[in-house]
Image (tube, rainbow, N blue to C red; front, top):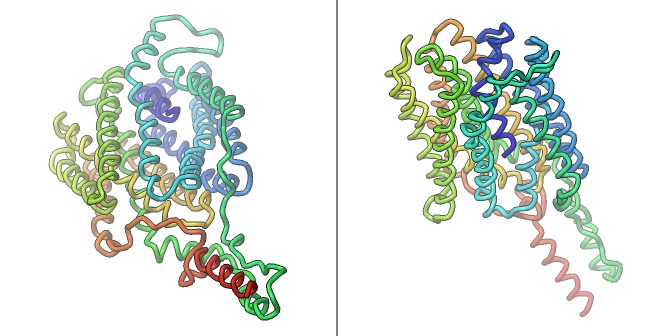
Length: 450
């Protein structure tokens, strides 16, 4: 929810803020990409941290850095410094890596059947935060009419995004210190071993000696199982498409509406509010489809690809020229947002079940890294293409990124299913399952009693 609020109050004003300190569209792309870059680098670190230490620690650490980064972003206006603004977003990006902890928490505590629903609710909270954007910006715009500048401190509609998020992050930090409940310890296949009961006789002891301990798969074996054998790469590719398309659109929309339609902060705030409504529709659709047994994640992904296909057909036909008609921008953006949000949660839900008992924090971190790389490339590419007024190149590249998904889908169709939770992976994947372990122990007890 807090990330949604940040998005809602920052995105409509960031282009104007960059201009106020002498920045260009390229600087806008660098600013948004820098946030995603440090966030991406931090995903694997906080994921590894959460697997081996109490999850409260990385959460609190990220909130503190988020507050510091947001404060620097707010101070940049009074200092008239693009460098401080960049530094603030870089530090805030590290703090924003806690989104992977949300997903890790769900993957660790919820059953496979409930994960898609809970991930949808989690995404829905972010969307509700975004939905508050128009109302918040109406209030923050009034700051421009007041003289609230003292020395290097300046409070207006642009700098307030930083100050508000600094307060929100500190409030979250204090809340987690008091209210957060630690999830169960990370399960490991190393713990799935056969211990010999002392009371078992010599004959049965020799039987257990053969399977005394099951070795845990190496990191590369785990990657091979999840990413290659179970087609986790396809879910990661959907993550990349989601990140690239959304951030490219976010970066491009405010400069385009300002130049072609003369829109300001309030109009752009309403636009992002409309985007939020579409995202809510997609999330509700995901929840409804998840409840219907006939609607598997594969069918939801197919529907998402159809929506994205319509979006890019409109984009290439109406939005590639120097002048983009308003109807074309709305139609393209509407189908794009609906399709991107619709595909994100089912893909992530399936991917979380593919991980099984391997380190969930690390593998969810991989997912966030792919998303983060896309979020770096999207703003950079959009900023550069807008600088040279090449709308067609932006639309064509976004379409090319999307095309890989429907082309690959038929080859992994049978593998895109939810995997049942297990205590460990099957023998074919390098270990023995828990049911087999219990059966052997029951047999040994019967043998001893006899």
